[in-house]
Image (tube, rainbow, N blue to C red; front, side, top):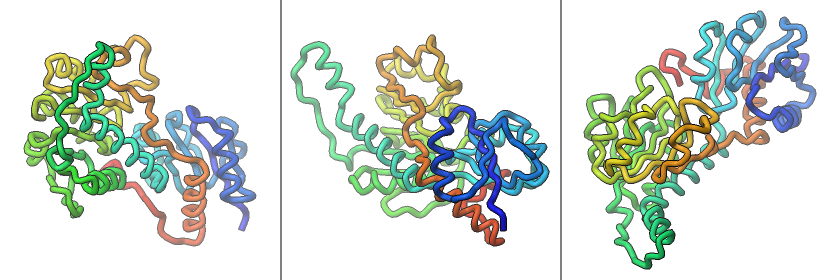
Length: 312
């Protein structure tokens, strides 16, 4: 069997490291770097991240589309996407580990009052602040998929009072579950630190808005490491300025890179991260893609297949 032909279409990602890693994961693989596709009839697989619309619709022998990241909304926004082609999201243990590190770091940052201590340092104040036990701090995870469940388990292990909200019921030890739209307000009302790790779908777009964030107890914190589309950006700063929210960490934004004139850059209560909470590692991720291609070529079921109707 001839080596597979893979179209690499990730125009916003540095291609050198990925081409090297993919070639190491499958020696002999024929990698075509978009827009240099060569004979389109020869392309078997596509590896994409924010690919230009329409480039996958005229590949007559395309068999599987692989997403570079865990989210796939960047693929599904292309209305010309062939409906019958399987779409696979990235599930890489290193991606999960990176997200757990980031979320735990930010939760502890707020739990241990680090923004307040930083403000005291700037003004020369020496004052110890009250220190809550982890069991006295309620952490809520929006989304209990691969990433959310991993974060919830680790935070519960720290002793935090952890709850999770999801589309369908989940059974995670030490994590109280809330399910569906009818239980969202109750979930928010008992959350001191809210972590958003939802997939971006028609149902979750704009879920972080003035109404829902106002359901959080006064003085709560927001961490959004999912997608920029979850947050109604114009609603956040008023809630911070009014003191209803104490602070927010934002890793994702409606427009990326974040425009230089955006008020998030300079707001004193916002920690801004350039979509770097958990990066896909070329070395490990390429081996996962290669293993999935091998499964497909043997006629076996693909791992991490996306349900397009749900959007994840």
